[in-house]
Image (cartoon, rainbow, N blue to C red; front, side, top):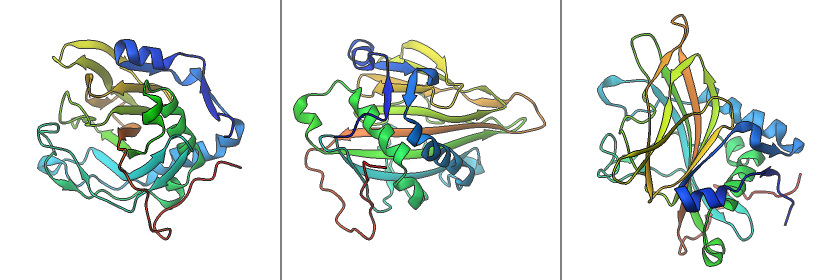
Length: 261
């Protein structure tokens, strides 16, 4: 097993056990130098996101790419599934649930990005899960999301409002924030009582939630200066335990993560 390429001097697992959420500031991460280029390449992906075609009333405030991954924590294996529609039940997402949303697929270079794979492994190491669950497969949904706003047209990071994502754990990592006012994350208990609010300001400011136990939402964004648009870029990774999940079978459509550099 390779040495950890992303580490932190914080007991995130205990925070998740106690509060069901954890916040991590960008400055609290240690990222190995050999991941620097991969991280910059990953952040650059947000400049090539196509529109989300499932917004209502002709809205255009969200751009995104998406892919499902197979993840086996015991070996660190990370493998993407072929392009698959994303589905959420209507009772969980009143805005766009109940339909198969066919988002644009992640770029090939993103699917194999070593920083993304290291971050997937780092996140999992923070979760309060049993040894048995850590030996079994997990299905991941990985979203690259950009929210934009212009004067008079707010951007809505969560147009569905306060919600669950229907994962076991959800990790939200800021990739970029420019000329933006708002975008406040709030965590709620399952009775929709607010527990904490925070704003992700710097790339890698992060929020992890134990999704069945808490809900979350994000306030709208507006431009700070009216002569340019507001931008809020998020990498969202949802982790769902699935002991019966089979790995992708077509090597032509999938990529095996390499743990060496």
